[in-house]
Amino acid sequence: MRTTSSSLILASVLLLTAAACANDSTTVQINAGVSMTMILIPAGSFTMGSPPTEVGRQPAGALWPSADHTDETQHMVNITRPFYIGKYHVTQAQWQAVKGNSSYNSYGQLIGGSEGPNYPAHTMAWGDAQDFCVRLSASTGRVIRLPTESEWEYACRAGATTEYFWGDDGGQMDTYVISHSNTLMSTYHYGKGYTGGPPPVGLLQPNPWGLYDALGLISVWTGDWYAYYPAGPIDNPTGPATGSYKVARGGNYDCGPAGLRPALRDPELLNLDVSLRWFYGLRVVMEADVSTGASGRHGSRTNPAGLQMTSPRNGAVTGIYSPSGRLIPHAADRSGLQPGTYIVREQSADRTPQSRLLQVP
Image: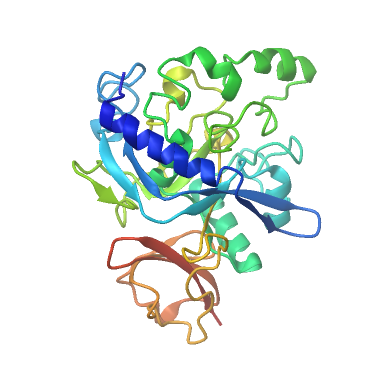
């Protein structure tokens, strides 16, 4: 068990906070026929990672050649601002509304998938997911991005201090998680013309904060580069500025219980081999206005000058992402930026991360 008296008190506070906004959601209208429901996640604190004794935690080097890729060191994280996160994975209808339906990888696979409108978008590298966020941000005027690792795990755990958000064993896996061992995969999906992909979103029960398929179904990309966790408490971690691997979370329908733990980290290369992209998709975050908790509009949405990187509401720039999802180093000469919409990631003096859109004319 990972529960202590202090963590029980913390969990109670978080659950009471969440109860106040359990049904607080907003809708992002993508086009006339396609929208996206976002759930408001309250600010709070939680223990990120897992204890060494957690069942299913792999020893160093068991999943990846380097021990660096299995770090789940427990540490306290403070999420100081509320945020919205998708109630479901991004669906193929939402993907096509934003990105169109004509991109194929070198295996001839349609990026985003082709099972149906309510199936999760998948078959993508990190840059594909990032490009979706940039395009949706540009079309809606809201800052929509990939979650940080800490935001994802905080929302997935939903105040729980146990291995899974329902307890310390996999006994309720069939209630909440689409995985290869779930009876739904054999009785519902395999028996109805299974084509090798995931089932639709939202078939099982949500977690306590209202997220469907919080674990399983399709692994979701985060915005973070992989790095060792810090030893002590930290506010709003966003990972290092650069790295070799982007981290995916949540596991997918081909995983067993060990690969479906909230603490599990899945570091992958930006140009993930196309044979593996089938299992990767996204769930997006929209930043909430801290004054109202109801708007995704945060900071300056446009920048007529095109190159001014700070304003009174914005802090130090920690990263700029291009329309194609490429990270532009902060130290780079930005005078050569091509016209387009960029996501600028910043950090305020109190280490609170924030984002804004930068429109280069």
